[in-house]
Length: 151
Image (cartoon, rainbow, N blue to C red; front, side):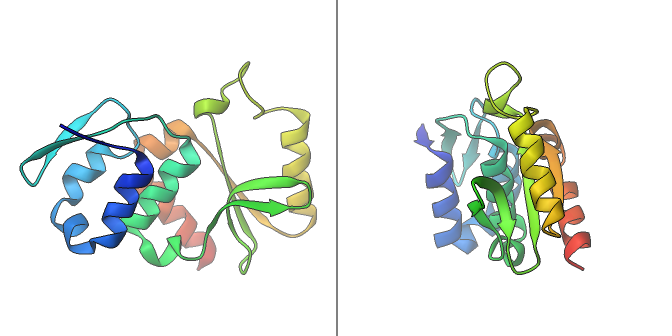
């Protein structure tokens, strides 16, 4: 079985769009999960590590909405904060809460996180917040909402 990191899988799909198109259903079931494995062109493939929800969303965007993915920057710096995904041209900030930042083990839901959202809003950014579960359970729906905001 081939084990790929999420970054390696993303790079494989970006470098080989025909591969991604031929295997879209298998890749959709694999993306966002660290334990599942699928057969892709005769070979078993699994993701080797857990990733955060923002990276999972970005991976889905790269595969299913490459036109959108090109607008967004991962870990964009705004004042003293970092935005999970940002489109500075349209002033859209996407925050994915949960995953490795669960309550008790991370920073989401803290005063600092709320301050970041307020600062973005005061600077006229459109802030979209999603949970890791939303991204994992309905990535296409999340992407559709992002498209609505840009339109």
